[in-house]
Each structure stands twice: as structure tokens, then as C-alpha cells.
Image (cartoon, helix red, strand yellow):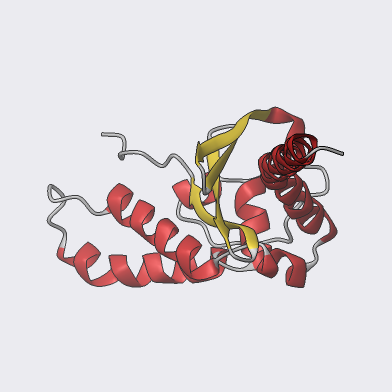
Length: 173
């Protein structure tokens, strides 16, 4: 075997390994999202907790609720005292494995400022209503299900849900 053939073979193997690694990385968020949905359906709180960055989701929900319900034009003294406490209570109730499952099943609950009242019905949740699922950046993957955007972030441990965008938008006047 000539030195040229050996070098070509090494380059071919390196290229093949790079392609396989890229394919596995490209498929990994889809697989992680599938495992997330299986954990939600089965109610496996440990598996859900392993796939969700709850401090980041808590901060995301709090930011969305504050943006929706506290705006400068209200001026209510009661809101300035009660609002942050109410928002913290809602975020604490929904930033749990069961609360997250309920929120994905019924996102309008937070829009109406309701606390979780029943066990989530995610077994019947129709995941075929996904609008899209794709990379936003090399480390961010977004899944849109009927206007709810689930943003997953790649860490050294794999893909974890870090942001849940409910599309709360601005309050209606």
C-alpha cells in the first residue's frame, strides 16, 4: 500500500466520522423532544425534571406575566402591591413537572391568571399539531405547538427546555 493511498484512506475516514457526528447532532434535538413528550405523557416527574431547566423556565414565565399584566398606564396601587405576589405564586405553581404538563396542555390558564386545579391531561395531547421544529442557532432548538414555543438549549448534558414562550403578548384594551 502506498503512502498516498493510506493518507487518502485516513482523510476519507475522518470525513465519514465528521458527517456521522453532524447527523447525530442534527437528529439529537428531535430525539430529545420525543423523549420529553414521552416523559410528559407518562407523568414521569424525574424524567421531566432531567429535561427541563426549571430556574430558566421560571424566569421566562415571570418575565412574560410581568410584561402582560403590569404596564405603566394602570397606576393601580393594589396591583403594585399584589401583582408581584400573584405572579410569583402562579410561576411557582406552573414551574413544576405537573404544572408544566398542564400549561402545555392548556396555555390559556396563565392568560386567565388561573392556578392549576386538576391533573394535567397530556396523554390525549395531540402532538401532531406541531407547526415546526428546527434549529434557531447551533445550540438552540425551537418547537412550536399551536403558538406555544418550547425552546431547548444544548448543554454539555444534552438538550433541555429552557424557555416556554406562551405568546401572551400585550393585554387587550
